[in-house]
Image (cartoon, rainbow, N blue to C red; front, side, top):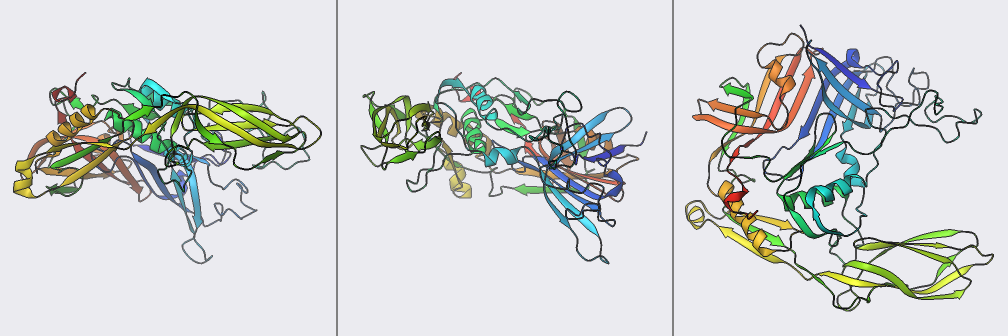
Length: 521
């Protein structure tokens, strides 16, 4: 049975893909999408991406066209989904949200529109961390907490907007349709869907040093960078799969005692292949430097973390929220973490206000509320607690002297912010030397083609094989024979009225063995 493709854009921003204008398959000139990793041994994946080129001859997708059937709905953050049905299985291949809409100009030109979209990682890169100090927590627990910090737009599985002025029909709906709770609208969980392995690493402290190191810049880490730090400490992987689900693999997930059975075997059957021997990127490194960050708790429990520098005025009947960052007032004024934080030395030069403290790992929120009839001026307040100080860095090094003598020095530096013990850092360095220390031939990616509808060749594998699948490759020209690889990323291009499907798998050599070689349980 031929494969049927469905490319859906839900212009009403809900999750059901049931509105009249959601199916743009017949208008699609090309669809080009990617998800996963493009480089081997990365901890955190790149964001997934999609580019759609659609026929826009009737100006339907021109955002400023008031006469379009979807007028005022052509905008960013609209959900997009690509699916296929081969007669046996309905598969989702990509989900995400529109970022930009670029119609071609000139009414006598090509009259197309290029729509770019991105996956969920977009929102994790834009949000800053703001979690409590994590003490003796497994990596998956911390990642779960970080995922809960981001509220994404209506998920693709079902959520509709309810306009805040919905009771007043005189007001204009921002999406031109009124929804009524309990009638044609239902609420959905805005949390990111996830599947997390149980972490094998427990971190003594995390989140305290997720800050910019430059004293002139008072910024926190993004959620994406914080997740990357935790995953790096685990030596695991984090990515979003085809359905937009967050996936976390622990450090043992992809380290096999024996080579697993392949999902696909390619014996000179790929249409293109990228191969290198002893390249200069992540695969060949003979000097590994791993940096860890021991932290110290201050002896005093009442160390100064922050003080009011200039008066703060709160108007009558108003509340004011203040975000403050902990700094080391006794030393370099560097950013620090804090625990058991409280406030004292409160002085109001006039009026008064209530004070609510929300203490986090390296910052705090003060909510000041003035219920009186005159201005309240806060001229003094001190945050105190136990300082958590990152005094610098300790470095572990693993070197293959024989490899350096033969092939020259190739250094890889790894900075593990959440790791305190240099012993652990040393064992990570030793493991990385094992899998990167000698030159070898590697296939970085392979490309397959098939008829997008009628199948043939490796069409079924192009549809079904995704990140985590095993591929065995033989290529005669390089004599690269019977080598096992892991699919770490996938890119697909559907063109020619869906009659040409081109798939590129990004690959990483299968790691045989486990951390038990070098790491204590």
